[in-house]
Image (cartoon, rainbow, N blue to C red; front, side, top):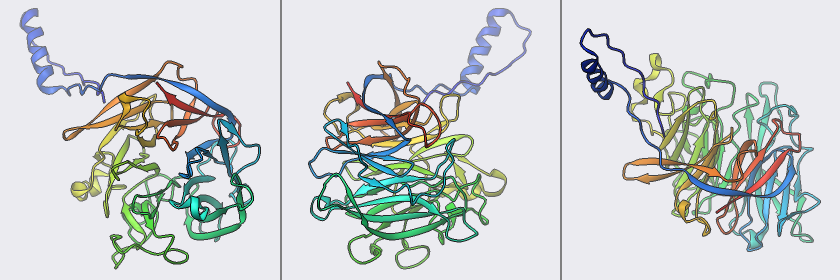
Length: 411
């Protein structure tokens, strides 16, 4: 990541040559040094389809069918088979979604994950925003299980819904919603801090409150009992906090994924200054709202409390072109050797980046596309069964227009 050097000023009465030497020396000593990013990687984008309504997630079933499943924020899961989208949704939940603004909203259908044994049991899981259940909340987050239709593999059986978990949401934003099964077979769910700004819930916010699920990564066992079981090795399985919690101190985890080696990468959207990428560990505290990125969020009150928190492996400052991080995947495909083993992620305003570990540091390479950047906003990244990566974009803001598109990242 490239930091702009800050100017240093010195007024002297020496000759011009001596003056220049002094200025150069002081610049080296007192100005912030440039931290060079890696050279850009140039690739291309191949449009798979367009006309989508706010695509926010893409995944596969892991069943060998090579189908792609695209989540539309308005409440649909679409199936793409052999490059063509089915005319009917795999799952339609529009009637269950809380009312959302056509201009901008963070609510809707937000997450999708297929059971590791989907080929045998036909089960999959979604996370969505439902109407509020009480006056104190803005809406309710719902984690639900469904099964595929026994008559059509490209359609879910709507009648099989089983609600596993509901979470009252105090505001309309910061909902998280990412879902993924880990290599351990357990289901992980990311939840934001409850919304608003600054996590102004209680003395230290929801992110630090172990008695709420908000601002956390959850880990549950969906197979052992109903609605779910708590894995024995969850950090608070025996007390000290909600037993579902795997990690905490997050503001709005917008997409996470497991690398081939089992590491869990999570992008956490910042407040006003920093965006960050984290490696999630069991019981880890990632700082919010004590910290934003690598810095104290509220120094006069809690800077000292933040000393032992887990810092992000990578962060960047807000700018005119970067304002909201979008999580991605460690590339495991075969087509782009330059990306092998790197974590590829994006910013909502259109930048795509890759980071890799070099000793104790993580270094960033910006990705450039020969096809340009006319795709607009990046809502999410996706991955197919072969490890190829995709961008989910839209050219107009709002969940209800049909300017969404799906692009495959190719050499």
